Length: 179
Image (cartoon, rainbow, N blue to C red; front, side):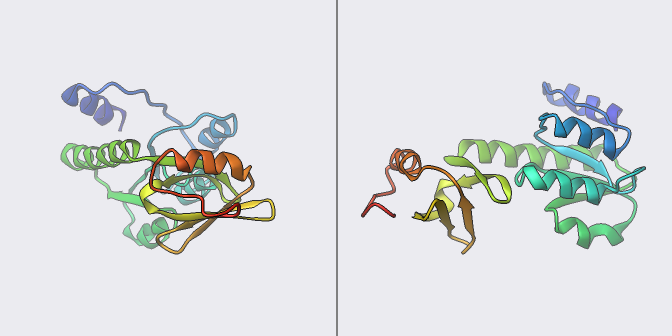
């Protein structure tokens, strides 16, 4: 995998850093210290924690970073959807990996170009894409972000700063003090 990643970097003239961990415990201990990655590449079958277990931990604090599973077992596909992961079946060819990385990097680039807020919700840190936000309201000490999908993201933050942030985008108005 390291050789394929280095080949990808060289062929695309792509500069990036990566870290190799020999098991899920090593990765999780680094993440607990606050380190974050833009993409996570995991094997499903690993010593100690399974890739699914590690991905669930990652999703506890990062809902948006792409997770890529390398597996020789297609039976894990259903479970991998629960953590919003992409599966690449082994053996992993150069073409398959390059195509997958190209797609993931394009997705990351598109997300970075969209207007978005990053909030700390009850479910962890989440990115709210402005074009997907219908409205925000405050109830008690909780700010509720209502998304197009019907999902409601609940946060504890000052509503005045939420209003200041949203009014900058020009597509929101403040009809009264709670909305």
